[in-house]
Image (cartoon, rainbow, N blue to C red; front, side, top):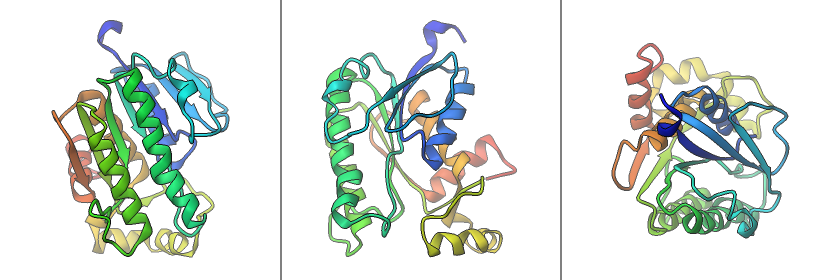
Length: 232
């Protein structure tokens, strides 16, 4: 692939579980010529294709205007866990930060494709009793209304952390412990973190759909199966 045909990719949330795999995959991907990672803390890695930009406060992304210009795609994995932060902080990270970043990106790269890490049960109607579902739905609505030519909403169910980590709460510790059985009994309710990351990057870079598209966990697994039959 020639440098002229390679894509310029923005990555937000590269220090997280899914974002970390998205970063690795993007750097290895011949279709991606440049990766700009917007991070709140240092990545601790270097690569000829990687540009790292520290930005501690996503409440105001105005200073990123120049860095976000001329981009072809963005993979947005910034988020937090329910129960780990207050409701106000959950809304701030899930909704406010997404909207603010999209505002600046739309002004700098209006034709960029946008892959967004949402979640299973996201409720665009705002009627759900679950705050996470309401907030993800609110963020989805904002992105679809932002004016980007291609917005891809990924709604994974349980994301299996391929590499061991400190789990954020008891529910995640339990799910990791029973994952082999859970995967067999409910295959469409789980997705590997690395597979999810690859799907988010591939869709944004290749623009496999001309408009807004929602990918539930079953859809994400179908994408993975086409590329890695043994894992799908």
